[in-house]
Structures are given as C-alpha cells and as structure tokens.
Amino acid sequence: MELKNTELKNDKSQAESKKVDLDKVTQDVLKMIDSYGFRQEGAYNLRLNGMAVCHGDSRHINIVKKEDKPGIDIHISGEAKNEQVHIPVVMSKEGVDIVYNDFYIEDGADVTIIAGCGIHGEGCSETRHDGIHAFHVGKGCNVKYVENHYAEGNGTGQKVLNPVTKIYVGEDSVFTLETTQIRGVDSTERENYIELADNAKLFVTEKLMTDEGQTAVSNMEVELNGENSSARIVSRSVGKGTSKQVFHPKAIGNNRCHAHIQCDSIIMDQAEISSIPEIDARHVDAQIIHEAAIGRINDEQLVKLRTFGLSEEEAESVIIESFLK
Image (cartoon, rainbow, N blue to C red; front, side):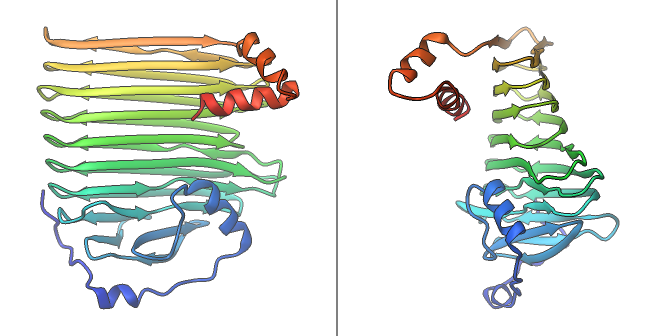
C-alpha cells in the first residue's frame, strides 16, 4: 500500500506544531479515555466540541484534515515501528458531532492508535458523538486500535455514542481491536465490520458496563475471506440496574480459516442481557466456534471477600473490576 498525495513532515515542522492550553474538564476527561496518556507530542489530533483544536505530525505519521466532510485522514508510513497516534474526542457542550476518520496504513507498519470519546454533560439536551472510522491496512502490518468510551456530568440530557468501525486487514497482517465502555454512557449503538485477507489475524476484546436505564447494542460482522485467516473475539460485560445490553457478533468463513467467539456476562439487579453469537461457514475448511455465558456473581466469591472485611458493595466492585480486566 502506498501513501498518496501526502508529504510526511520533517523534524523541524514537528517542532512548529503549536500547543494549546486545555481546561480542567477536558484534561480530566482525557485522563479517562486515553489510557496511554494524551500529550501534545508526536502524532496527535484532539477534537473538542466538533472542532480540531490541536494537531501534530511525526516523522512517519501524517494527519490531514478532510476537505469534503468533518474528519481527518491519517497516513502511516511503513517505516513506522512501535509508534503511537492519539486521536481523542471530547464533548463538553450539548449537540451532535459526526466525524469521519480514515486510516491508510502502509505495508510493514507497526503502530498503536489510541482513540476514544468522552462526554461531560451538564445540560438538559442530548450530547452525541458518532465516530465513523475506516482502516485500510496493508501487508505485514501490526496494528492495535484502542477505543475507550466514557461519560460524566450532572446534566439530564442523554449522553450518546454511536461508533461505526470498518477494518480491511491485508495479507499477513495482525489487527488488535480493544474497545471499552467505562461508564456513564446512556445509549450506544456500535457497528463493526471487518474483512480479513490471506493469513490475516484479528484479535478483539470488548468490555462494557451499563447501569441504571442505560442501553448498549454492539453488532460485529467479520468476513474471513483469506486462506488461513483467523479471528478471536472476546466480549465481557456487566449489566446493572435496569440497563439493557445486546451483543451480536457474526463470523463468516469464506475460506479455510479459524474463528472463535466468546461472550461472558455478569447480570445484576433488574438488568437484561442478550448475547447472540452467530457463525456462518461457507467453506468446507472453515472452523468456527462460539461460546456464550450469562450469570450472576458467584455467592462463594462474595462470601470469601466478605471474610476479609469488605462490605457487600466493595466485594462486588472487586469481582467486577477483576472480571473486566
């Protein structure tokens, strides 16, 4: 894969990237959604309330603002080795923000992409972010994509996140997708679509917690098109209060391939959890497995932790934290 119409920046232009002062709310939200630590260094782009407020390139990663719609194109050179790019989004004002980000990753690149969205809502109207991301991954790449979702604030308006992720993984490449919904999001609908070429590998870990009247829907479709492609999809979730969750992963084997889907959930209070793993073999050598389990917290674990002096609430928190690690 080649970088098109892109000139990578040199060290001098990197130094000329202007840093901006961020308010405390933005800084605090960034700490929650960027587990690697957001800094205005290297390759980064911070979107705040629908606008890119700061941006920087590195020697091997170039970020270009789209001209036809809101969003950015991220061009990653094949010379990038063990590099990072941070592209968080923070919403601290009411309204709807829709952004389109496309990643073009050259053959042989090794990169970690840290995204995520945090909402700080104090108003009575909806605050929503819809991030539509597409990844075009070349051959022999190693790509890790981390996306954390979080919401806070005392406002009565709905805090909504609806991500769409499309991933096209080239031959002999490895793509790791880690998504976490930390807390506070009232409604989310996640759509993932992934295609795998020959010998491509996919590793997915999804972690989710809902509480009160929150709802979360996660749909994932993986097309194993390439010979000897493989996918491992693991979902872990906790439903509390009167929240509702639906997880619907689908693995389609179009060639000699291997896929394993595992869904584990803890249900509490009056929550509802629906896990619908789907497997579809369209080739005689496609091997696809699914597992799903939903249950309450083990009473023996609670009793054991209580003997160490923990309250029931503290014991539940320890079990949940360990389950979602």
